[in-house]
Amino acid sequence: MQRAKISAYLILLLFSFISCQEPTEVLVPKGDDGQVFALDVGGSEIPYLVITTDGEIPYEPGVAARMKIYQQQKLIQEQRIDIEYRGKTSFRLSDKKSFNFETIDGSGEDMDVSFFGLPEEEDWRLIGHVVNLQEKYAWDRSLIYNHVAYRLSLEIGKYASRGVFVELELNGEYLGVYYFCEKLKRDSERIDIKSMNASSENFTGGYILKIDKSDAGPEHDNKPLSYFMSNWDDDARYTAFNSFRSDFDISGQPLNFSPFGAPYHPMLYLETYFNYEYPDAEDLTTDQKTYIQEYVNQFEKSFFQENMPGEDPAYLEYMDLDSFLDYFIINELCRNVDAYRISTFLTKDRDGKLAMGPVWDFNIGFDEADRIPANDWVVNYNNYVSEDPWMVPFWWSKLLQDETFRNALKERWAFFRKGPLSESNIQGIIDFSVNKLVQNGAVKRNYDKWDQGIGINYDQSISDLKSFLIDRLRWMDSEIGSL
Image (tube, rainbow, N blue to C red; front, side):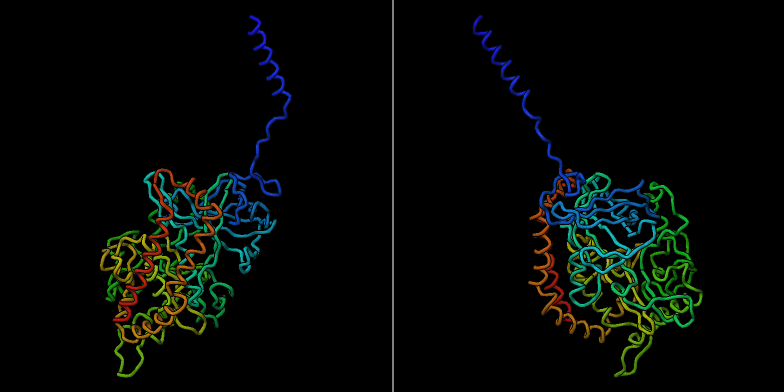
């Protein structure tokens, strides 16, 4: 009995001691301005973006938001933005969405802003890799496809979108690693061609065209997200207002049926459409549209002109040879199965020739591509895929058969292989990016979020990427050398 009383007394004494202690502090991850983070990123050097919107994010047009950028938990930049979802197939398939955003001032007007030392502009992209949790797949498990391809283009001297890796928190939810990069647009620091207006002296440029799926027009503004999630028809809804059609089919034969048919009509695979990217379709005059259509038509017709011995091929009168070579080299090295037929930009500067590029969108490139053999050219896509709504234009096969193009390709490839396209340089680009992402914990945080039963082995994805590029380089050495 006495022992029981002593035990009860000790328990009461211990409870009294504990109750007198200060409550244990719960540590909440914060920025130095007091902003609470969705998760603890510690002292990570990877920029951490916190975006808070003023309402639900639409597909288009955007919604106002505030963006804060932190590095090692310190607020380094704060900016008002207008944000919307982006992408077509990737938007519909991926649980990890990508975004377009514009920088705006307090009154909602566009304003040019610099981020991470990049030139000031108002239009930017946040690109995430595609992840589908229901069907358990992910594209670009390395997270670096676009960065590597764009970096290689820049290093051979051709502009490509510049950017940095960031981690994104949106409305209190951590969304993982993104590529924060420049939108491709006419600008002296981006696609550097002359500006256009409605005056007659500007007929010759500059123009930006895009071979791609069609863009939904302003008539779709403010429609619900559910509309865009199932909006496949608009991808193939070409009109005389937003585009023009090649006069030739994908084999180089004249087309004998009317353009602008219904989306996915049976003959669509034979057609190549050029979308008006800059100026916007609504800003182009009828005469300007006529000019660029006729110029492209003359370019395509030039492949059927016979040349006298010793003369340059006729196509050189209309196209910038180096840009076509460089576009071919980067897309083939990176095995971009969308190249030539989707996300394909062309420019025509004032008094200049038709030029290819910049390169864009490699999310199913490299070792991800599975529609063509690893030991063939992407430009031969039409040999392996039949009646895809978007096929490769005929002039690429014509170029590969042309001696002038082949000889120029040999020379340019050999030059680049000694420097920017050497195995050591490419390995260095990959290692620098991967080491930074891994050592700062960004890869782990990303896949803690997005590897839900998919079974992603990040180290293996990097090893596979490196092996693919070495094999591809050596295959191209052999193929180009034997042209």
